[in-house]
Amino acid sequence: MLEVLFEDEELVVINKPAGLLVHKTALAYGEEENALIQLRDQIGSWVASVHRLDRATSGCLLFAKNEQVLPKLQGMFMERRIQKTYHCLVRGIPSEKQGLIDHPLQSERSGKLQEAQSKFKVLAEIEKPFNSTGRYPTSRYSLLEIELLTGRTHQIRRHLAHIRHYILGDRKHGDNKQNHYFETHFGLENLLLHAWKLRFEHPISGKLLSVACALPPHFQHIVEKLGWNLAEINSACASSPTFDLL
Image (cartoon, rainbow, N blue to C red; front, side, top):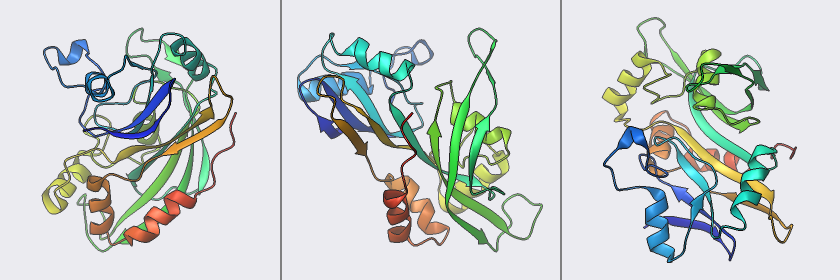
C-alpha cells in the first residue's frame, strides 16, 4: 500500500517507493505496476500525476484528483511556484557549503540545450578510512539538500555529475567504482536520491502546504553504514531551513 502524506478533495501527495514507475511509459512497455494505477485503486478516485520522479527516486509525488485542478497544478509547476527539495548522498565534499549549479543540459528528446539550475547545500559530511575507488587511502561523502529551479530530465543526477559529486547508486550518471564498492560492502541496490519535500500554495484555498517524508530504509541503511548517527541526520534533514519560495 502506498503511503499517503496529504490528501483533500483536490489533490493527494504520496511517498513513492524507489523502483516504482509513476505511470506507464514506452520504455517500460508491458509493465502494469505503477504509482498512478496503485493510487487510483487504493483511494478509489480518478488521479493524474502532476509531475514525475525517476523510477529509481523515492519520495513526495503530487497527483490531482480532478480534471479541473490538474491544469492549475501543472501551471504552478511551469511557473516555478511549487518548490521541490531533495536529499541525496554523494561522493566527495563540495568546496562551498551552499551554492547554485547553473549549467544548461541537452534535451534527451530534441538534443537542444535547455537552461537548468539547481541550488544545493551541505547538510552533513564525513571522511572514512577506506579506499572505495583505488586512488586514495580515505573516502569522503556528503549529504546534500537540493532544490530544483528547473525540471529537466535527470537534472539533479546530471548536475552533480557535472561538478563530480556523483550520487551513490546512480548507474547512468554516477561513479561505477563507487557503486560497485557500495554494492559489495554495504549491499547498496538503490539510487540515494529522495524527493524530501513539496512546498506550495494550495491552488484552491491558497493555504501554504509543506509536505515532507523521511529518508527511506535503504537510504538510512547506508547512512548508518557510513557511521553517521541516524537520529542526528534525520534531525538535520527535518530542521534544515527551507529555501525561499520563488
